[in-house]
Length: 352
Image (cartoon, rainbow, N blue to C red; front, side):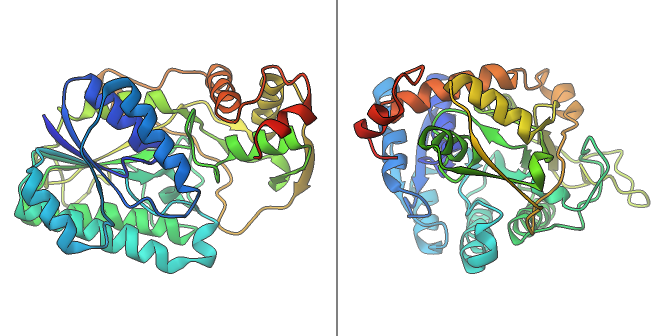
């Protein structure tokens, strides 16, 4: 198929492009290579993909540029769009809210408009477990309401789901929203906990554990995320004949619109997660225990029955194995030995 992947130089996007090219699809990527974190990591991800499967078209475009997005769709005529581009991060949204308006709302609107004027067979887009917000009912079910987001980031992701629903209803765009749960693995973002924790452990610098390490997170290894996306490509949603307007189901619709959770189903306390990281790095962390931060969700846990029912797949890679693979990549990318025989010598090889 002819597939457009936005955020193609991002963590999930690069892995997604690699898998789709290996599966024989024609892929066009889009990324704006912004400086939310070091763009060199994004360039290195692209090079990693190219080293394995060769060159692929990659447009340097900002989703907020409506004319550029329209031109790309007109030229490429994608059958499937996988929108993984977004301004990520809960805490960053507290200080830089406009970035979320430009990327997550205006940018997503431009994607929807392009899909409207250049009809696609399936639009798949990244949502987030953050939309569950103040909901304390676990495991989180797509049938639950998501009306109490705790951060602007979460609010924009819920808005994306609602925007997609309106375009599915009005223009018949088959759209699938994926609520990702704490994705981790090789080539992850440096603002996410695996790289932050690993760097702090290696440097011996204070590692801040908020809520005194008692948060629970449903960690999901990147390969399980990508397998889920790959299987859902051929499962565009259809009108639900059994959808009841009197008792509306939050996960489906009378429109061709659907929501799935993608999570590991096994939440782990952050202090236990940290212990596994210490084990694989061969060093102890210098832990600083702190109270809960604004915008943080206490616990996450995914109910993935719908994903398994529709695709026959549920995430399978255990956290211990996933972190082992992450640490192997981390030490290779930052030129560190495994195990860390000399902390000082390791830091001389490359500044973190």
